[in-house]
Image (cartoon, rainbow, N blue to C red; front, side, top):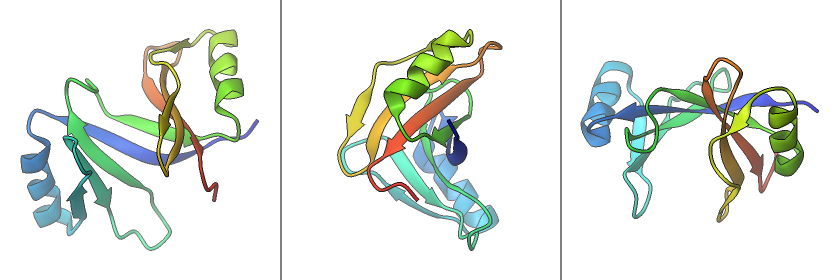
Length: 119
């Protein structure tokens, strides 16, 4: 089973304000996801980097990376079988894919995403 880092999330007390900082400092494009305090980031990395989002601290307490996986249910089972734990149930995100938060054996939070359109 392979997986690669495909997304990052940075929590903030004020995600909109934090968006302005990264726009000004690094030229990132940031757009609010409809109906949520979730701000999608385009780092304009020309294929060398990944995209991400700013979110509220009630969703995440520390930054998290998301791994693309082929089959979310198998990845969730593998996390548990290897001493990690699942922090959320499977969530189906329309037009994005199936997603869940997990933690490794050191308590580091990460996401697992089975994308609708794998790349």
